[in-house]
Length: 197
Length: 191
Image (cartoon, rainbow over all chains, first blue to last red):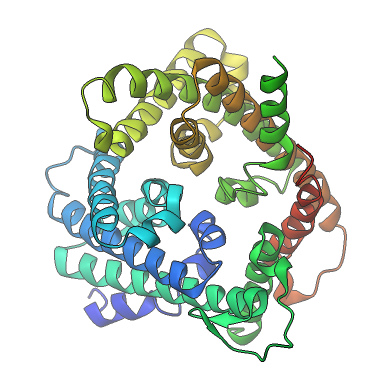
């Protein structure tokens, strides 16, 4: 008996939460978490692509010949990414600008191809939908959490609202590249500490 | 000539693709545990980035812009990269088997390496001309190799150290990458 749909959804939220448990999709995780807003925007865009591509790949899984499957998945993903890119350009231009090159780079986010290959190509549509949604939300939450840490320490704000008094000196290190690597590493350490079995 | 030299320096050190632009991090952490795999990966990446950079620049200039199809950039680029990687793989297998064996499984994995796609997109976004695109692709690739090999040698030493349990593996890897990135950060403002 296969595991329930709920299980497929919930596993993305903690047991296999993407950037931490499956160490995949690190580049956007590091690059767009300068602020909470960017993190959430990236998370939502990725979730959209992940859900759509999971559903489409799953519904086409009997049609796609296994020899050219990776190429097919990439085309499916690339088309959805183009959609997100155009939509974001039209309706959320400031966010589009701040995410910049990382929107087209959702195509090569290993989480999406990884889920298409490892899950959607073997499971039915409903379960793939649940898996995509769970993974996507997990990814969004992780980005938001990392974004919060970096934004609060690095610029002293949360969602662009000041958190500390005027005497607070922002810890610029955190919004730069070195801070990104270190805060992700330390968060991973924290997750290991809490989730130890 | 001087401009191109500055461009090269800035792509290798200041805007290092791994440590300052955060591109290509998954294989960076995955293949840096051993020096051998790191060197193999670095070679494969240099090879593919240069070819992909040139190919996508040509396609963008002579096909996409000419026919007003720029919105297809993402799809076109990823297809070019995927087929290029496949082609390079077949070519190497037939003609230079030694190199093929050396690169091993890293070649097919490069398709989903965001550094490759990233360099192609940067070339287009900054509107480089052909020579600049060539120099930039090559220098970004060299920067990638440099960072990867440096990181791998640090990581080999970490294997010998006693790391607290929750910090093991990827976690300590990321913190180390942060320190290495700090070193590259010092080049900022040089050019």
